[in-house]
Length: 280
Length: 201
Image (tube, rainbow over all chains, first blue to last red; front, side, top):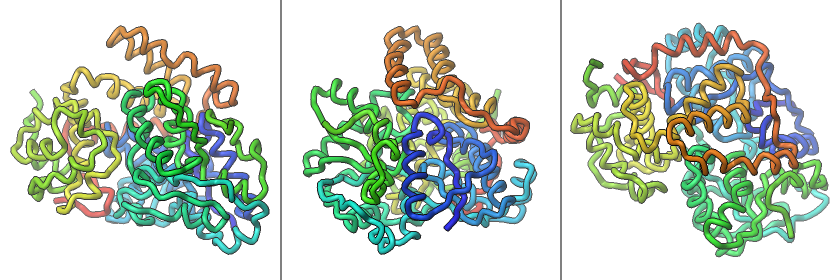
């Protein structure tokens, strides 16, 4: 199976551990990734906070490139990117007049044909059976708190993925691989997302609540599928500990890290050795 | 003098109908930032209903909002509260009335977009440099200026620090997209299709 790949800025920048992890994990499952040619940033929170038209045009340019190059499916492992791509796609689907206007803005014909997928959806397409067949090392020592955050499931009308209040798709995959995901309360609470730089107090407070609740419910690690969640829960965890005088000691894995470990990949191939919080 | 903004302008920018809100407060109940807001999400919606957009635009709350979409997801009347927040932010910046104590968020988002305009992709080191400088010139806060300096060697050790970011080959198209989108800036709310695929009229 070959699919289009939109890494987005984070996976090519300070979240390159997620990039390594996604590539290695999917390669082991026989999924080839064709990176989108000369892709541009999706605009993220800044664009939708400051300029509505720009927030639709930037992702639309990427959809146009995918369409030009015949990529019917596009994996965007960052939920911010995938939501912005999906919002642009929905707006394009709304009228021919608008498709014409946006095509003119982005210098390429763009329809609403490209399908946008997150990491979990790609794993679901590979199929639980097939992933399990390739498992060489069951994840028996892992009791993860699966954390979805905001943009994997919200807004549900745009994303049409899992249950927006009580998602279970990550648990289903990990349970199949021998892990014991815990039941906990804050699966879909926000960690502060892109506010890491601009409003650190907010990020520390929200991340502290999330890490604390996961620990109280018996988790021995966290699992995420979002580079911003990872920054706030992993990179900021030492700051959270200092601010609130505690020691959460929770390793934060990307979903592809744990699936990759089950497939027999090693920690450095998956980029796990580049995390801030590591096993003691 | 810019023209007066009214309820219908927010409806048009946010592709929603704030008049549908019956003040159940579910948006504020689920908001992770509610306890830090000067006005709760349902109170902001009420101000917009009453046409008091000016007061809403000056609120700190719109810059405390983390765009997590919980409010819009849970609204029983499908009012897109998160999109109203976006609309109020766009208008507050376009009209220069953003709450002064939230200026760091505004500066960060502006620096982010300028960065994309120049490079096509985010260059993190450049963004942090520009943002830190501008924020320091605005509030002269030395601890905040220095705070993340220790992060650089930590990121370097993990090969996560790239002094020169990536740039797209075709930077011309990025600049043209920005230019063509500029008239759509919130100074004059214009009709653009919404993300949920429906036109608001």
